[in-house]
Length: 99
Image 1 (cartoon, one colour):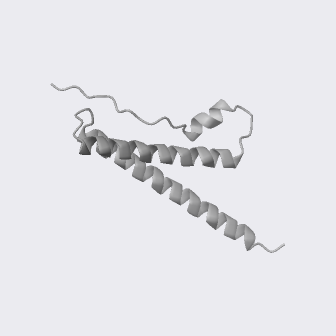
Image 2: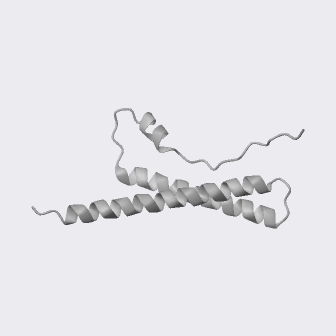
Image 3: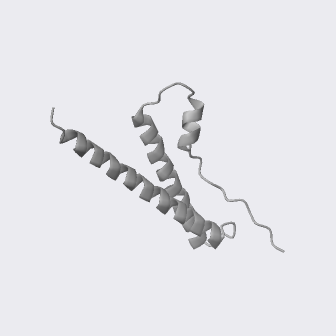
């Protein structure tokens, strides 16, 4: 029977741990958004690095690990795009309010 190797994930900070770390302290939206963008970038860099390792024939990276990394990068990018779209929609709604 073969063993399952651990998946090495890039270091990113989920939003739940950000709010848990700052009990009672408000964190500006810009820093939360910035950390989310950094997480997306880390997922994409990690996937690109694994693709290069597979292309070079390094045996440490399996196809399953590569596919999981690519999928995580794709999903995180889609989440970032959806957050951006919601922010733009909210901005437009506020700008269209009559005072």
